[in-house]
Length: 345
Image 1: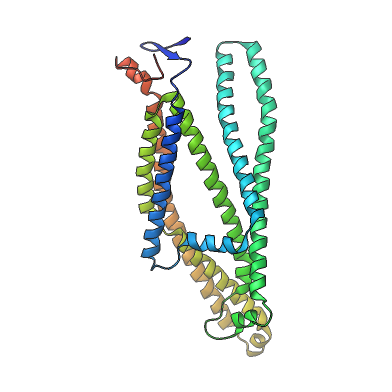
Image 2: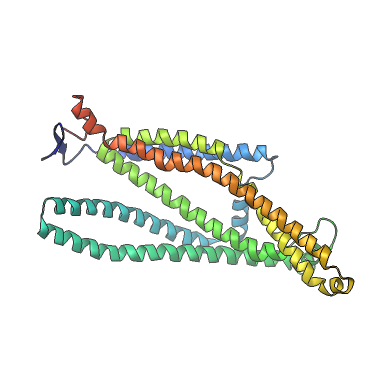
């Protein structure tokens, strides 16, 4: 069955059942996803060697999680992945259903419009529950990871007979600074960042595969392949301009801990400082620690600003230009008298 739409310059006839290339789209999406994984591995290896070798960030995170987390956290990640997948399918359904509603409005088919709006109102209740479950499992995973890592730190920190807590705080030049900050604050930040990384990695993966299949089914394989090529170029440029955020974040947390430790030392030695009238030297120590922290934060903000300009333009705005050309491709081919794509006739 054929549906005819009219544009300036003549009619364009669209096939209501386009040729299905969903399988090819799925294979192309999986292939490009494998390329992304390999590319990320190369980038991490290069940055690790550039920073002087040693253990990479991914290896460190995996080692920490392997020693602390278990089946409970894995089950929560599985539930979170399922919710993200259902949310993606829900977004696809909303897009299709919204298109039907707009079509009913344009054609003034009010009985069908009433039915579609009722279906939309009923389905969005489930979508609201799904969004709430996403936030719930995110919070649950964050608390579970923090609990497991903190309990493991307590176990290692207070092992009977080893006096680790004493050696780490009082003995030698290589003692650990601000252990309280690392256990109480850094673990909480790590749990928050880890949960954000998991949710923000799983959702784009599911969206990428689902939307690649939909684009291949509707417009053929040329559209997703063009977008893949552009994102490959954009990822190379973004990686080249991206500052070492892992090293920057680690340095910032170290400086935050030092600043907090200076205030802890002031509280611990307040009687001696008051007796010796040492307010001026102590203020100088506190201000110097604060200045180092603020200087690093300003450097981080400048680097983030420069890289964000490139990232926003490449991944948000210029890709929109490419998408507009791809969407208008069948109309341009028909008006120029060229062959129509597989989804038009």
